[in-house]
Amino acid sequence: MEGGWSHPVTIVAVTKGFGPDAVEAALAAGLADVGENRVQEARAKQEALRGRSGIRWHLIGHLQRNKAKLVPGRFALVHSVDSLDLAEELHRRAGDEIRVLLQVNVAREPQKEGCAPEEAPALARAVARLARLRLEGLMTLAPFTDDADVQRRTFRGLRVLRDGIKKEEGLWLPTLSMGMSGDYATAVAEGATVIRLGTVLFGPREKEATP
Image (cartoon, rainbow, N blue to C red):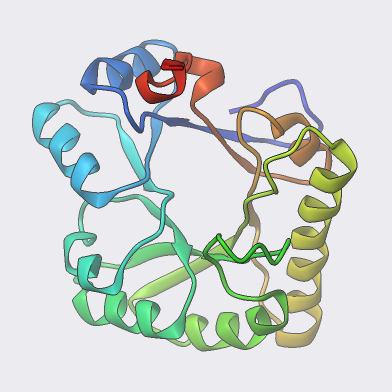
């Protein structure tokens, strides 16, 4: 989907914390890509919407290795592969090919998941060798801040890292999943091809709205 920017940008409607009606609302608005943070919540909505065609489900949250068995056949794209152990478990469980992104902790925040930037080239090389996974790009989360300079450094860091992987490893990773409701404009300016929007589409989640 294009958003008036200089390159195509896919909007993933993040329905975490909302019911199946939010998925229906996204589809009605022309947004077929739907993101969930947890496999269990995604499964519940997939069951509720069984038979509803045209939904492309994305897993955008942290994936524990013991939940990898629940992924095959359920998601169009997994954004959060952050270790070779997880990648190998997904590969072992896969029937058909699974499309994946590597999550990179560009800002090196200790509370967030993702591999370190210096680990990403070797991890990308290793994941690209797994026949039943298709590595398509990188994902990151910017620090929770209104400082556009901090956001920009994070997103630019992911783009520069992706370009370095192409040069060093010969791998072209076209997808850059970066940017959420509070920072998507900066992310797109720095080259995001996928943005993950929840609050800006659906309003605050119940817990966020409670004082």
